[in-house]
Length: 451
Ligand SMILES: O=C(O)C1=C[C@@H](OP(=O)(O)O)[C@@H](O)[C@H](O)C1
Ligand SMILES: C=C(OP(=O)(O)O)C(=O)O
Image (cartoon, rainbow, N blue to C red; front, side, top):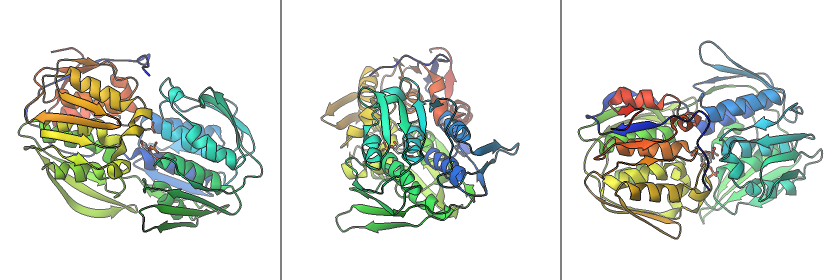
């Protein structure tokens, strides 16, 4: 589905640039930031969040938690302070909750609301209003919540939580941390044990952070690779200090740029290295990338490391479908890197890419083809064949309200023969505020005009 650009749309062009160099840090992790705000709003006492991502998606979650009765303030030093309502203590919002572009914000919030006995209405931008919500409403309805949305289970949607939620045991039909988290968040205000079984492990920030706040969350890894997560309902969550690591999904863009712009050498500091998030980095190393993971440490309970990246020759690889959950948001930028590698890169099992902020599978395939890259889609697989040389470029791409599509094509332009443009730079602010300034600081040549 195509969406018109936002009202604040601003075009941006990217052209071939000199070698990138510099020592940078990217903004905080989006997944961790959403959860820090939601759990802080449910905890008793004060929660202080350092390094919160101040991107549009997360700011929408902050606003929603305020509308639901929590105290959420930003201090002048950039830390965020919450005083929560206690589990089950959220209150009916006086107005619609507008979650903007954020699938994570909307779906996790639907989980929270499912076990609070009042009605709230959720909406979002044209992209979020086109995304499927049945994946969360189906299990949450089993717990007792009622949903009245548009056809196809889409936003705007009224969520009426139940006063008497029942715990469920649910097996995810798709690998989705958002669905898993929505059920666990509903389970917080539900008596008894709520259990989610995931066929393949997905990012576990909800489990880790809930435990840190004081909940009883048990995780069992089964021999067949599946994982069973059990939450004991109605815990008392206690406010805590959270340090948000830099987002590995954002770091992917400067890392990719440094791999393809000739002569580049950069360092990206303090990147989150949760093993359920690092599939891209595994893949890049298999492609022969000169990528060193160094200074591994634990900061604020999360593994982080510095990444040292140098440009060099890359070769095509086959990325197994089982790796998708650990790099689901990184396929757009991987497909750009693949366009500069020698030979075929086959990215297997990307059905979920079709229901992100846009149909990322089609947008990347069509945009890369327009830029002169040999690319095809077979079923749910994306296959990019590179020649080890720079693609032509020379296109203006409609990003369709999708930040990752926008950043991916700007990175492509940094090393292609002709400039590459995007129609809407503002979309990038959902996950990576300051992207353009940070990349320009490394050496990127971005401008409002073609050429
Ligand atoms: O739980 C999360 O924070 C996220 C889960 C993923 O979505 P799915 O659960 O739909 O795979 C990912 O694409 C999204 O950016 C963030
Ligand atoms: C898919 C993404 O986010 P969300 O689902 O939260 O909109 C993303 O950030 O790439």
